[in-house]
Image (cartoon, rainbow, N blue to C red; front, side):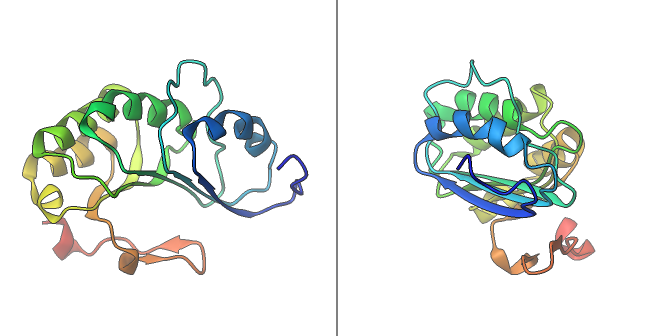
Length: 172
């Protein structure tokens, strides 16, 4: 990984273990021409207390995906997401996938993100009921500054570095 070209513009990483994020952060920060970064974290690190570097700001977007989040991991997930948040723009897309959080779990997660200053353009979740909950939609819109959507690749256009803005009909 330390031999990546500094002119790299697009990077997609999947981390099997959450602990793998720490040594990558300084390397990612050195990629000054990075326009698009997608990081998948399959497992949370044991702690994020010693993480002092965020994911880099990029010209176009940063997508961060947490997979398999359990109710007992909500506090750790909020801390990690807040610490890794790109400094100037926040996350373009924050994806929470392969989880079965309860309604209360989703509320705790979003409230934790809001409390820690997380910002997103789009937060995607796997369950339709969560995307239809008025409280969760309000937390996302007013607290995180973005849209809450059901996780679906259909609304994303990956090929040209753009994400289609959600239709007005979807917002209501």
